[in-house]
Amino acid sequence: MDDVLDHIYEAALLPQLWPAALTRISQITDLDGGALFLALDEDIRWTATSTFADTVAAFIEEGRFPGNVRNARALALKHAGFITDQQILTADELDREPMFTEFLRPRGWGWASGTVILMPNGEVLTFHFENYFHRGPVRQQSVTLLDELRPHLARSALLSCRLHLEKMQASLSGIDALGYPAAVIGKGGRVLAASMGFSNLVSVVATKAHGGFALRNSKANGLVQQALEQVASGHRAPRSIAAPGTEEEPPFVFHVIPIRRNAHDLFHGAEAIVVVTPVGRPKAPPFEILNALFDLTPSEARVARLLTSGLSPSEIGKASNVSIETIRVQIRSILRKSGMHRQAELVSFLSGMEKTNYSA
Image 1: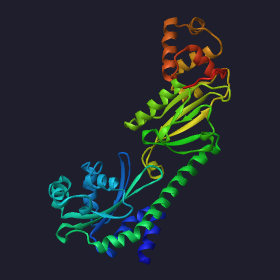
Image 2: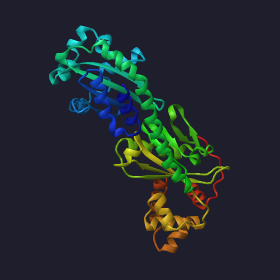
Image 3: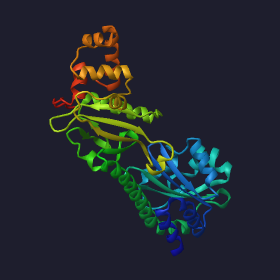
């Protein structure tokens, strides 16, 4: 038992060792394979013993995990321990449920014991151990041993979760130290971790139910939520949204940056990082700033700077030797890219003179 516990708590600190820990648990409980599932909405991560890994991979690839009868019944039972198939399914259900008849039994499996643990961050953790079908149902002796291990498995999982959150928080602290408030955003717009600077933006950012957030300016909030929805649907390009200032805060730009490639290893369950840039009060922002904020073309950036300097569209047209209609087309493009709707709003934002207190 001490050897098994060593494996479990070692895996809490080094997640890549979970297959070895699951193998050791399978050996001591006389079971043939095991798996660990971590699910948050449709995001599912798993690891398994070598004997069971191919089956689990096929199970996930075929989309059988969400809503599968085992997990659904186990969650409904709310039993703080390991349960077997016979406790949640009748003999008739076991013989006609497609998960068994079409998937598990043809692969040689079909008898299991598992437990579901709800994590504080909303994730659902499942420890699952399976027997080959020809060996028959999981014995009570095996379940008793698994129940002895369950508190250690739960503590180990909670420790892994806490360490992961602290890693995310440490990464945000580095961004925060540079003067940029930031937050890690998961599925459904949940804030998984936030820097101190982001948490302090109470006059600009409001908390929502279920761990979400919203900008108090309704127009800017709509654009931020749209950007997060685009990230969730697979859009991989960053987006910057301007948020007018308030009496307490200067204007800000919210940069929605998708989590890409290996960054998922650090930000597990995350879809994007939101980095907030406070805007100073330059009288005429240079092209580099305008391009970074709104992806303006050189000609659009020039029009924006001249607007901020106090020139009217007709005056800009004369100074640039282009038609007033061309200038108006460029202004409409600037407004669209910046997420603003009125020329005066854009000028006020860029000049840092916006003092209106917007509310959602």
